[in-house]
Image 1 (cartoon, rainbow, N blue to C red):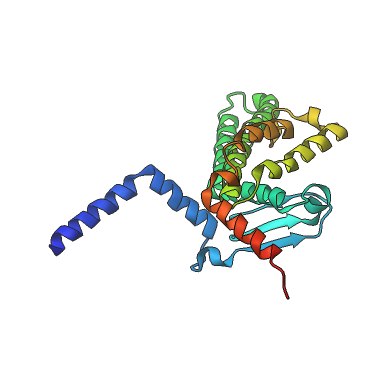
Image 2: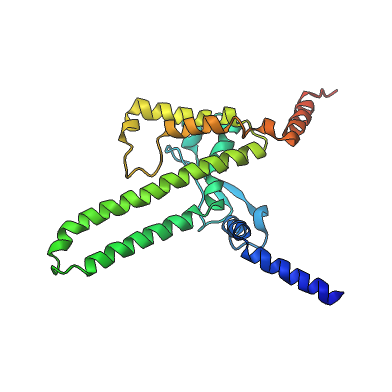
Length: 237
């Protein structure tokens, strides 16, 4: 019996190790937790005093979310909006976008160097190619970056909804970004080298997504919100 159990456990382990979905989420866990043995218990937020609105995470400093004061001053006005921003940033870690971006840029840079090294004109062709290859590299890397932003928007919305936040209210932060881009004239500056899709495009995509990814779709969220409301409304004597 012990031998049979051992064989079944080994078969299960082999099947799990060969499953691409399992590999994906094991890798995601490594990106999220870093090298810490304590795992997600050590997550912390770092508030940076800066007028530039921004929020970011990095694999180099695991389990930390960095947010600037400028983000609150200009955009974020409630917890639902903040949840959308933080869900987006954590999604970059879950999906391994930092590692993927570094890999893509390294491959493109390697191809660029190889082409210049094989220049049969001993440098004459390289003069014209250098600028072209540099611009092409920036455009290719930016294309991957825009795709990553869309993926992070989608997963970030799901995370915010599963954490019982109102994503329909939360996406208003994207509408504010869209308005600022329009008023400042930067909305028309998006091109092949832009690392982010236009805010209007992101807002429109999320408007469709929040119809199905919202706290109301998760039964436990309704129970949790009712309990919180009762606790807040309870009178103290």
